[in-house]
Length: 85
Image 1 (cartoon, rainbow, N blue to C red):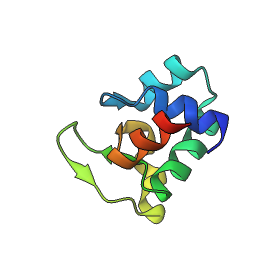
Image 2 (cartoon, one colour):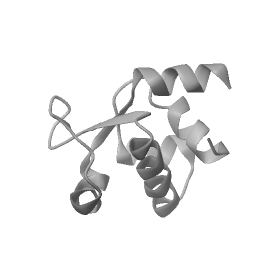
Image 3 (cartoon, rainbow, N blue to C red):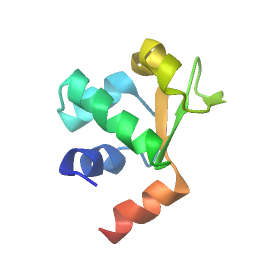
């Protein structure tokens, strides 16, 4: 897990929008997007779209179009890895 991914997970103990993550982590949007993709591929983060109640399965082909309008939450595995680092 990279430092940026660790910082992202640090903010995902509660459901958080992409815009809030940008502000809280201080990461540029492109870097945040890349970190979220990596965390989603590893199963460490879940994402919700079009609202905070609808969880979607990660599909790389469609994710880019909705990534900045989605909400994110660390998965159980993500919380475990974050807390054991």
